[in-house]
Length: 77
Image (cartoon, rainbow, N blue to C red; front, side):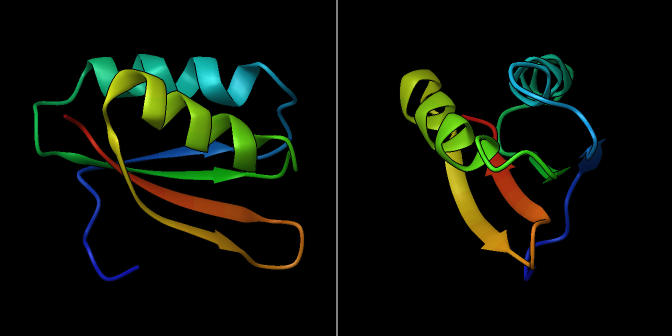
């Protein structure tokens, strides 16, 4: 990831809806413009994170799939 994350969240091993709930909780602690790096292992988190960002106005800076591990970088609106 090119942008250094303000905070990281390890949601590996958690199944829907926990990765999204933890992401939302973590973003609530950040200031606008801060970034959150999220690691997840639930394949559903790919669409969930995309939809969450669209609904909340946060920016999905990057989304990567590394063989069953998913990494997201979200910038808080």
